[in-house]
Image (cartoon, rainbow, N blue to C red; front, side, top):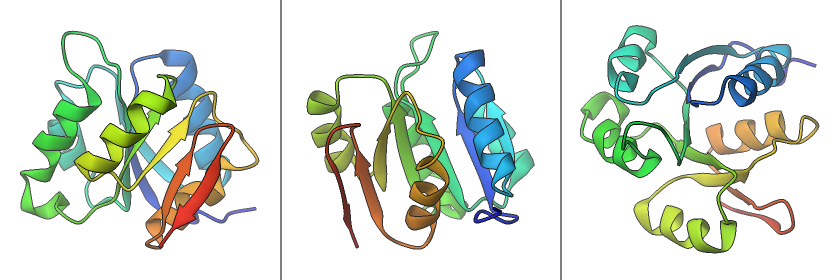
Length: 142
């Protein structure tokens, strides 16, 4: 099922296993993906891949860079000011979701990713809804 047909998705994920799983799920759903592993090179790689429909950010990255830092960096670029950015994280959702929401992310999706839900969650966000999925509590807000 290609529910993400030709959607362009950029992901920042340092863990090779997590990156491979997300890439596989997204591409099997029809998406075109690109990624950054380290974070500090994300903006350069993103610009080389643009245009994008959505950006997925791991919150915990190496080398003193966080998903929050990247969010701020990306939002400063006018071309990405309206692109939905989603936090993808294994961090404690009870602490991170309030911070992510306050920061202005379009959603939060807990790791491990659920292959049967992940593509539809991404599509909902691309289509303008917010998705806040912690693995236990799931709701949407338009």
